[in-house]
Length: 144
Image (cartoon, rainbow, N blue to C red; front, top):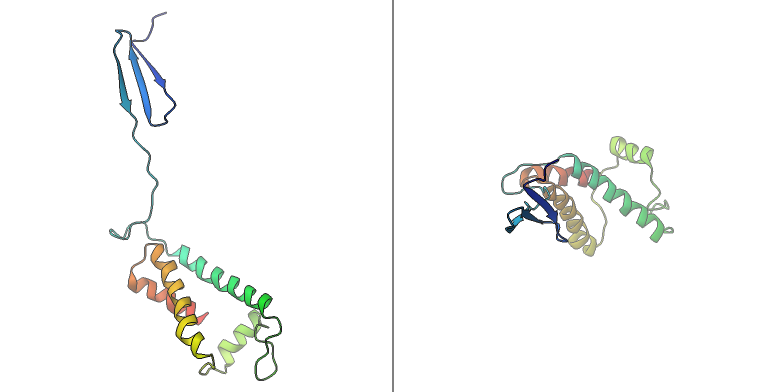
């Protein structure tokens, strides 16, 4: 049985290895540091069209659930509950209307809606999409 020429020992630091040779010389060798992969806005690589397509409906669902819990007795002018909706009422509104101008307050139209739209845009941009691709997600989020 022969003794190896080099014995490799790892010290406490995870990115360093000490090599000890049989000739008595020791030197420190750095291991390459592993980096995590992230999306790159500069190069446009690693785009994800799926991530914002999932994040935007999830955001809307959570917002709607919060509104249902925080404002359970909010009533519209026609006597219906404001947040009493489901998929069938959503579809009926899309197909049969009535479509019209909302009667939201100034504060909602000047801060609430733009903030929500910026959330949609931010979801798409953080997934590596450019401005124009993100604009599509803004419109879909607004429609929903």
